Amino acid sequence: MDNKRGLFFYLKLYGKIVVQDIKSKMSYRADFIISTIGMVATNISGFIGFYILFRNFPSINGWTYDEMLFLYGFSLVSITPVQCLFDNNWSLRINVYTGDFIKYCFRPVNLFFYYQSEIFDIKGLGQLAFGIGTIIYAWSRIGLPVTFLAILKLIIFLSTASLVMIALQNAAAATCFWIQNSFYVLDLVNRFRDYAKYPITIFSPVFRFIFTFLFPIAFIAYYPSLVILRPNEIPLLTWLSPFIGAAFFYVSYRIWMYGAMRYNGTGS
Amino acid sequence: MDNNEKPVIELKNISKEFKVLNRHEGLKGSIRDLFSRDYRTVKAVDDVSMTVNQGEIVGYLGPNGAGKSTTIKMMTGVLEPTSGQILVRGNVPYLHRSENAQNIGVVFGQRSQLWWALPLIESFRILKDIYGISDQAYKDIQDLYRSLVDIEDLLHKPVRQMSLGQRTLSDILAAFLHDPAIVFLDEPTIGLDVSMKAKIRELICELNNKRNTTVILTTHDMGDVDALCRRIVIIDRGKKLYDNDIEHLKGFFGSYRTLKVRMDGDLKKKALKVQNEFPSLSVTGDDEWISVLVDESRDRVVDVLEKLQQSHNIKDMQLEEISTEEVIKKIYEGAASPSSDSEGA
Image 1 (cartoon, rainbow over the protein chains, first blue to last red):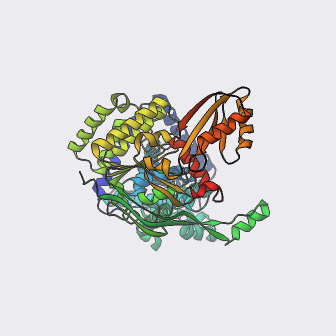
Image 2 (image 1 turned 120 degrees about the vertical axis):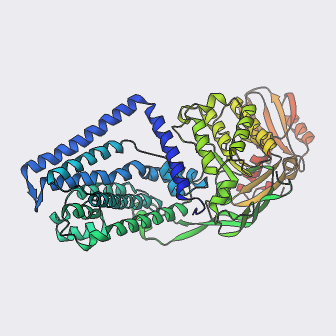
């Protein structure tokens, strides 16, 4: 839609909007403190559940506790961007239903960008810190070497995983342009995200196929983390996953924009 | 600025059709609808043409569901017309949405486009970047705003803490910020008190004056129309009914005058009786007066008065010119029932 304005323009604009947004959120101190506490509690309880499970099963399908911990941390970090930057997808359904979505259509900037830039969910940052901590801890416990190449791989595949997650959510949110009750679609995608924490080999072949090709959550943590954890048994799909991630993201963006462009709005 | 006679908006034979599913009643009907291909076509806008020049304030009127919003959406580029041609500053809005957005400002009375949590000044700063407003232009427009309204109170208040009036005011200021050629105002005074309405009207008038901005105003409040518009366009059922100066309006649809009489007894009940005596006229009663709307091209006020006097004891009377509001009401009613006798007027 808008090709005249480059990446730099959008990055600068995004930075400005986010700084303002954070500033205004921090001005409501009680609200900010309570949501921070809530976020910490959520992460701790999630981790406790994980810990209790592995007290009883020291390994699942050849995956040790530390490897699973790595996978867990990996999935936490990879869902952070979708949570922080694309949280407004959750409100898309309401905005479309009430007709408020039309107010986003009058600015000379990319509609997708403009819509998503409105909300920055600061709570995701705590999860990011927690996830990074978990990765570092698991990394040292497994005794993986810390090399520049390993860290580069980690960053590349974390980005890949994030892209897949974002793509899934965009596509799910965009269904509201066609169907009334798209909340269930979005909620379903969000629930499936939980399965991303586990190695795909524990599932039956049918689900393995579904999670790889139809509902590509295996790309969120499993395939990318193989690169770090099991460098000797990497399936071809892993090396393709950065491209698949980028492709998924692009397709989801097109779907979202296509839906937004055929949006008519309600009467006023 | 541009030459006053240069058209900024040109609509040529614009139509917009929507496909609507024919819905069936009951649960069985709903299930049928799931698989139904039984569509009918609804013409929301039907062969509308008009030209708007730079600096004009045009009142775009019509009853609910007349096709106003659809036309506005086509001019802003959100909708693509089914047929016909639209040019907004030489641009086809739907094909060049971003370029078009740079030339227009939009305000919806009920939907703020500002950042909810941010103080107005921060919204302005973000808009400055979005529209690429130069530092000088930004400073100029702020100086202009300062001279027109008491802006200091607003600037540092988050939008969500504002009253509806302050929010509308802020939205209007935000819409004019990038000095657009055209501003679309959709019911800007809806839900506001009398003094705020006056303030908003004054602001729109001043901004139009100072910046020569074209304003397309949709409203149901005839006070807005009387205060702001020299020209009005009326649309109903997708068709353009009227497009001319507001002065012509009163004569165009018959020359109406309101005869007000006072008599003894319950005026509301009496009004019903009078209505029965004059079935072709519209009669209303309130606590003080019985009002009879007379179309002078068909009936003489004197005749009506004389006839009234024969059967009622009239204590007082007044004669009033019809207000814009009543004319518009007349037009809407006439258009809504094509068989009625006011159609040909």
